[in-house]
Length: 375
Image (tube, rainbow, N blue to C red):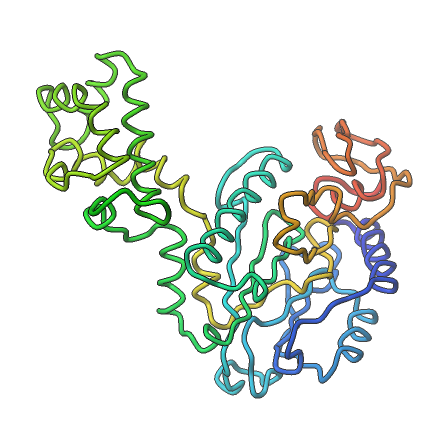
């Protein structure tokens, strides 16, 4: 941002923080805090951290005076959160955090990325509550203000877990290290990874059935160790295999050369279908027991949108491009670096390269993203 743009955005943030009803996390005094300041022309973010507050009023006064570009607090609880080194802080535990970021999942127009990451978040929440037995009342759901969602599990049962235990949870969520033999053994499962694995295999076999004989054979023989005869035999029993996967699976099928090649491939059509059954959470965030996370009700310095807390039950109806937008629709002139279509506030704005007039909320977003400067 140039100085004029930085000042425009900072003024908008100042207005927000003077009026907003901010919400602090529980056990505020045990958290470390970090702030990124507005710095005209800065090539990189520089954080002011190792800060602690005793109560909400002290925190909110600090935010209103500082007006940060980004605002973070630790998922960890510390004895001395303002100690200058991590070793001196005295770690007392941490919330279990899941971060779903569209950048790690799909590329495309902003609204489409938000739609996809919302679907991933719905899958994650279903796994946490329906399969891992986590009480929904102990889950705090937050739109990140950028391209995803944060899920905070504030349950004492998880607070003392180290990185290894958290890795086990995120591996389950992401479907990492699953054993095909175990998943395919036993009766017909109704939920969990046994059901998801079978669904992915059924989808894959059904997809092969939509191809011509030569196409399906060619695809299978491209797999390691699969010849034409094996491929032809596999394709002939496709319907029987689908019926078996929907009922009592025959474990001897795991000795089939083609099945083994399919489920062992690290990339390809079956793996793509299996990955679609997972919830694609950012693994390093969950395993990091000293993570800084955005404060709900703060503003995201890369979008100007609100880091919006919401109830789990409200996720389906939530539209971040309306519900997390806090700035007005008054006209602002911007100088865009390139043309784009920007959906926001229930409309799509066709922005041309160069100077144009857009609503303030769109202008803040474009400036924060580095797409435009104030004209």
